[in-house]
Amino acid sequence: MYGFCEWLEGSQWATAIHQSLWLFPLIETAHLFGIILLVGATSALDLRLIGLAMKREPVSRTAGRLLPWASAGLAIQVVTGFCLFASEATRCWENEAYRIKMVMLVLAGLNALIFHQTVYRRVASWDEARVTPSGAKFAGCCSILLWFGIVAAGRWIAFL
Image (cartoon, rainbow, N blue to C red; front, side, top):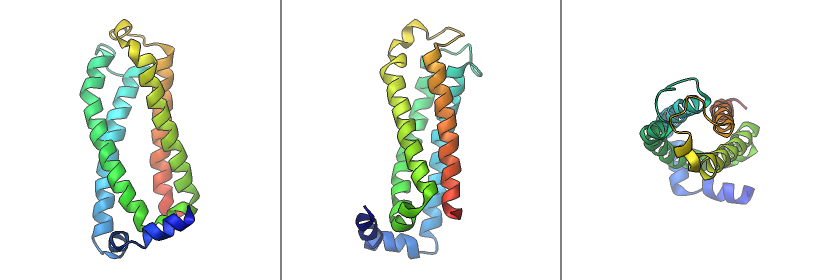
């Protein structure tokens, strides 16, 4: 994997990002904007699932309003994150905070996948209930904790 990181980092476009005075900060700013969209929308939905916000709002309506924003944020995150990684691939690969972030990203993805394939498939039966099923609450709690960890680990990458 390290060889791939060296190759990627040595590519012309990754080198241009790394050496540019403005390109890396612009991409990082877009990455932060993606975090705002993704984590903001996801956290709002998670708070509804946990029962701490929007209790009178049906879960399906909340999800319908927020998931497009989360999806847009995720798309921005993937593109900008890959560009940032490519520009410092070997450094990232050796960075413990980066590895922790990647593990938590996989776990967050699995959490969302499992939630949507199980509990959310039966949303019609509990959509307007003030108390959501324990599986939905668990998924919401895991999501908030994982996204907090992902953002924190992302910040730590610069300092480790």
